[in-house]
Image (cartoon, rainbow, N blue to C red; front, side, top):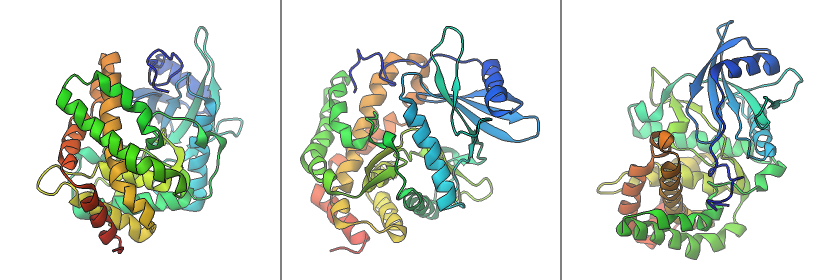
Length: 350
């Protein structure tokens, strides 16, 4: 999956460029939207913010042509399912194409065909730019728990496809750590991967599995402009996968770790708030810390490798990298049993 010579890998091959004028024409042709298009950043897709003549705003996404088209369909239909299951969840709405389908095909001369989707635009303040608070953290955990409950029972054939950011396959990313020049840092990430291999990977097949968001990093969260404690949006379902439910919590909780005197404390509180809405099982809590560390190791491994390949997009790719190293360093000193007992106690287990 992570072979650097694999030209079909959506992380190893740059997505072909699309101009703003072409994006506007595609929106008009496939969705009947007359709008101006402006580029947005993205890891794999080509994304545009649309300002329609009627005042509405949208996000137009051109999927990577190397990506299996079932992945885009999976994401779009998952959002439609969430809208029916929990209509008040702050997620983007899917705008159907003129043929009534959630996805369309964009074809251009001398370019590979690619899947096109249109979503509502959610206003709000990106979480990294917002004031932080314990109440905000609790609300984010509860919102993620609600999302997991809303996705329960949703099935799609693409859920089983191999995706680069799937913690279940963390060990497949481990070879990329060979490109980390600093031997101390490399050893740090390798120890996190070893925890995953020894403790988490054997347990994963026995845990509850379903469709999960799989990428609740801070850049995929919006808060209300007037009240930063209110979660206004969960964005980017581009890394959705069918996986153990606890993996979704592990991804989100890994971004709550705060290097300092007690780096684990905010993640423990986050897990407790999640548990209050969607109860966790003891076996899930027993590997949660291992999964959190595996996610951090994946961030530094994949991020560093991709930034070296695509220096023009390095700032976007590495936006979580430095802090992920700091979090890994802080957590490396925490005994596994200590973390496990704290997480269990916070959720009412002894």
